[in-house]
Image 1: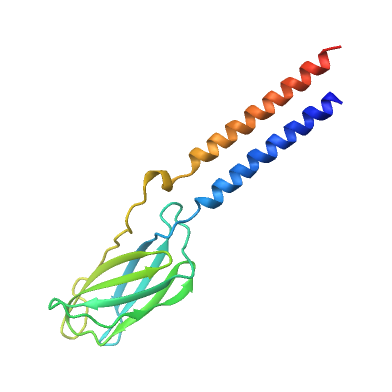
Image 2: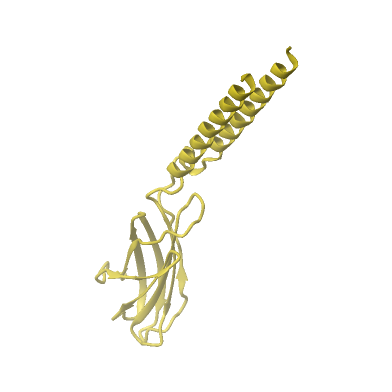
Length: 180
């Protein structure tokens, strides 16, 4: 009977520890902040820039799917195009184009919602809209506090707790079997 009680306690403690690990992993998997990577290049059309955006979560680089992403371009006179919605192509990727772009340097800005992220890039075009020196940059979203970036501490504590619970239960079972 004592052995049965010790086994039941061990199973209950292990189940509670596994439940704690599962809750910790679900709560810290992804936040509402993302990182945008942007690539832009002129198309064969004289006045179009093709834009490709990749949106990922910063803590594990998983693709952020289902986000709404828009892009617009600003010229050196601080005049902007209307925001253009990009098409979701899956796995955090979004594609689209900015039309009616004339020559000169353009700063393009992409914004994502759910998760929130902003990225910018620059492209220089001649008057005929051929590239001089295309360049892109990615601005990461605001950094998260370190305690939100990695949940391995919780996993480690939970694993140690499970190990100690199993060790304590095994010790109790062995001692009770030796006692007459």
